[in-house]
Image 1 (cartoon, one colour):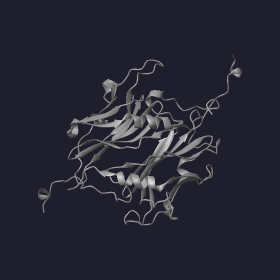
Image 2 (cartoon, rainbow over the protein chains, first blue to last red):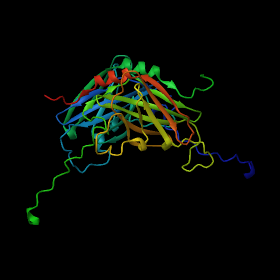
Image 3 (cartoon, rainbow over the protein chains, first blue to last red):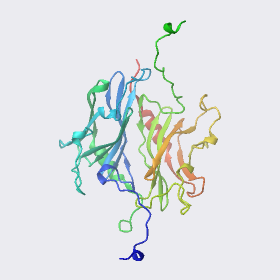
Image 4 (tube, chains in turn orange, brown):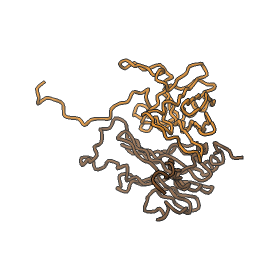
Length: 181
Length: 186
């Protein structure tokens, strides 16, 4: 092929994030109508809220609340210290996913990791944003956390996975393709 | 007082953001069970998500999503003047009693940062994103009355004509009643 036969320059397109790392951008998610109080001590609380479900998984906010009137501890924090807030999600069939690096997959090529996979895309002193690749089976869905640095002991809250599955079924495609329209 | 007698340094006692500018931090919100698709054209969709209700108002996220697979937009894109400028996107909440709350700062009371305004006030606190999407956190100070509650968006530059959806404000009021204090007093 000579230079004059080269295909025309095309504008760059958005880099594709792996499908297991986030919810599908072209969908309206189904909302899971609950917010969970997972842990509470005299000084801190950890919530799971903003639960949104898709056919491939669900995302949520891991939100830290500090009791009003209590001054923040001023520490020399390392970047991403928020990862100290350990989170694990447990399915009714015994499978678990967590935000500890030991849970992270080492994908090779285009091979998809086995669900469930918990991917925490942001992390900081006020919590973070979490995507869980893979829907749970029916039954109890358990959110467990522990935050040793802030003396938050192992704590958990349980949600009926049916709420997540029902919300995932309500998710809609924003721009249906002709084949699916 | 000499230098050596100065009181020891104390960390800042903590500026409190006025309650009319943020949702209460110490509450578990009531989740309003809706996801709202306000507008959609061939290139973008505008959604309202994460609708959380409290006794003092409603918190939510206004999201703009570009259609996947589009050519990446450049910051100053003279070739595609039709592109949706996210920052031009306006939002109004229309109550059943005729009151309207707008996220246009020109419609906010002049002294809203220091003096408690009459509700409703639609304030945005934090916005950002990238070409893959844009999000803006909004706080509506004041609950809507029963009846229809309309979310209407549009871009001031005209790329997106006014468009919106209506929900039953009762969903918001019921969710607000479900909100609970994280640390109950007494």
